Amino acid sequence: DAKTTQPTSMDCAEGRAANLPCNHSTISGNEYVYWYRQIHSQGPQYIIHGLKNNETNEMASLIITEDRKSSTLILPHATLRDTAVYYCIVRVALGSGSARQLTFGSGTQLTVLP
Amino acid sequence: NAGVTQTPKFQVLKTGQSMTLQCAQDMNHNSMYWYRQDPGMGLRLIYYSASEGTTDKGEVPNGYNVSRLNKREFSLRLESAAPSQTSVYFCASSGMTDTQYFGPGTRLTVL
Image 1 (tube, helix red, strand yellow):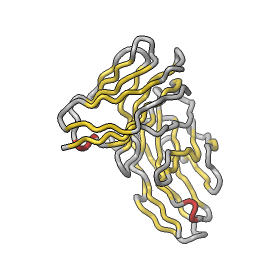
Image 2 (cartoon, chains in turn green, brown; image 1 turned 180 degrees about the horizontal axis):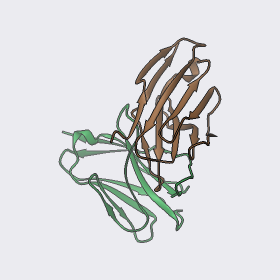
Image 3 (tube, one colour; image 1 turned 90 degrees about the horizontal axis):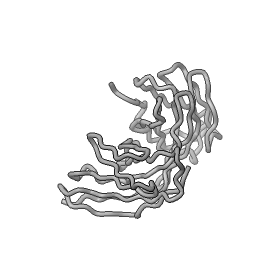
């Protein structure tokens, strides 16, 4: 899996957009960018993933640069409940019937301030 | 649709006692996983099951056994608990897209 680099911590005002960057300069053509988060004491939660196109779901948007060497997770209207550690993970997607460890790095501690 | 459920939520054991952590998923996923997370640390894979009827060791399997009872259920057993096994245990499952979905965790303390 390609290595990722994220800032250690970020703050965001409640109601504002939170933009979390991730660098993955060694990403391969068949590797996806996944984002998970872990709210204190809870299990990690899947947020979104993408290959090369921008993606949006009910939780967030994922913007991947054209060269795919970096990406940004956007929480459009951050709330206090979005305070968590956010993990950017790059890996090849496996098909059903395969399994592999999900390796979490240090992530970014996002603190949403009232 | 409950996703991934784990029981119990909390457990305290004495050294040498045994117990089984239960995990079930209702998403019809083929693959299931057991991780542990120590305070301030990342998740480490204990065992996984790529499909019903198969299990494989992960990064830290010593002291644990697993059973893939059926497609829905994947249990983790501690035969003789040790203080070093004090941790939070997470079960996860994944399907066609390799996205892993996690349960709420079991907080285990071994005295």
